Length: 252
Image 1: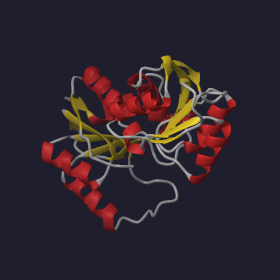
Image 2 (image 1 turned 45 degrees about the vertical axis):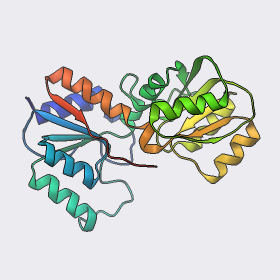
Image 3 (image 1 turned 180 degrees about the horizontal axis):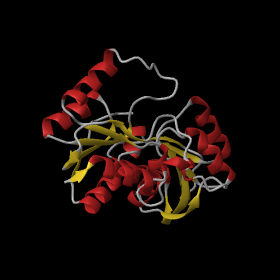
């Protein structure tokens, strides 16, 4: 068991949240009971995840996508009212980290996806070293495009949308979890063979084909499961807590 404020202060410092200009507040978003034994992790603080936390007796939720996004409706009504009502009535805290969790060099989403795919990480995708904009690396051996697609399917549990950038093998690759389709241009500038992100847009298709860069849209949810899991495991080890990750299926 550990004190909620102690846990949050540690995470805020560990993830260096003051370094980021983010789209939502990082850290403690909803305050629950002061002592924590069991933390449930998930990608997004959906109603289904909150219900799972209540059902399993969690003291706190640790997520990548929390609430109170910039430009969103600040009124507490409808869906937001129901989510907050359930959290508050159950005395469950909501702790959320967005960009800081993408960028962390050890437990970050981008680092964890690279390790999951067994890529030798060679550096940040962005020449300025901004880890929120992804990483690049090399496969141990060149992969034919269909083998790369099969690898992503096997490791992520869903088949990615593949926009072929030619017939050649893939050795060098860039990636950024979540949306991040706009960072394909960074991969093109580095002359990488392929790029992976969670989402795709109309213009991304043309850029991939015309640049000769294989593009894999592997799923926003699917690519961002792993940072929360790594952070939760770290937290459990640090404070002697119970941590469990709840998978809420999402096809996107």
